[in-house]
Amino acid sequence: MASAPQTSTEPELPPSLAPSFPTATLGHPATWPNGNSDKSELQKSETPRSPEAKLGMQVEDLWDVQEPQLSPTEKLNACFESIPVSAFPHAPSSQVIEIRSDTSLAEAVKLLARHKILSAPVLDVTAPEDASWIDRYIGVVEFAGIVVWILHQSEKMEGYSPFDSALNDSDDDIGPAVAAAAASGMSSPREAKIDNVITQSAVIHMLEECAGLHWFESWGSKKLFELGLPLMKSSHIVKVYEDEPVLQAFKLMRQNGVGGVPVVASDGSKAIGNISIRDIQFLLIAPEIYKDYRSITAKNFLTAVRSHIEEHQNESPLLSGMVTCRRDDTLKQVIMKLDSMKIHRIYVVDETGNLEGVITLRDIISKLVHEPRGYFGDFFDGVLPLPANSRV
Image 1: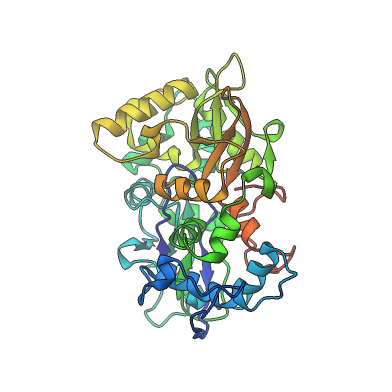
Image 2: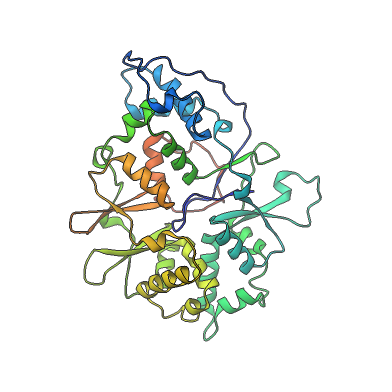
């Protein structure tokens, strides 16, 4: 099963599969680290306002007993290392789906778009009811794999649209969702069932719910430049110019292992919009767009998508235009914006609107906890084979 991310136009890594662990039981802190017994409104509440806030209070308990000489990041790393994965709130059942292996690619795209998710596990319809987890699920179908398929089809089909066959389910090469799933593969956990699904968006939402707690305010009140953000500077941003074909944007994502690219004005470095890997759906569900898929420019694609969304009265971050921040904004401000806008990346601009960098959900999480190289071994190999320097 897969959980719906809390973001929309920006892609993120396929969800982490969390094995089941015993849940820790932790108390509530009696005083602040400095001995002050005053507490925030969140702490004064008898009952946490949300499951995410409850997890934040567990971090608070652990924060209070950390060695005082540790930096905030070192403290947080130690805190989260002591909390089992099973303590993370479960995804709502309404946001959990799976895709049958006999589902067409067209229907798989519609399901992902409808539930606002980036990927979902594929259930083998031929597997017996008592099959093990690894035999029951045969892979993951995701927008990243769909992009690869579309680019491959567009390169080999001259004078013929792969989107028509995808929508009409008329080509055996398109096949069921299992074709896309097989390309991704799926790692097997030690247990025989998926206990929960944790996405980067869910982690960011958890952080937003922790606003008011001492550990969060101590960390989140720092300005971006004080934390070394953005990690990716303007000179390394993968971008597409407004007059380039929109297929070039998706090719760049595929080649560079990124989940979104800014659309930059042809006469400078000002960004006019963002195209994410999830936006490939509009080349499959909007006939007025996919009929010109070879020639439509990035700028015209953005305009056409906005018109399509407005006509169908759908909510989307695309309607809000380019979402940006400044280097002197606080991390808390950025987290609040990312969570409220349901997006996966935010672009850093200077006072004149020129791009200075990009901040992804993973960049923020990397400032929360340190992930040593090779920490997960080969557990996630095959789930999303991206370049080593990927920042998705």
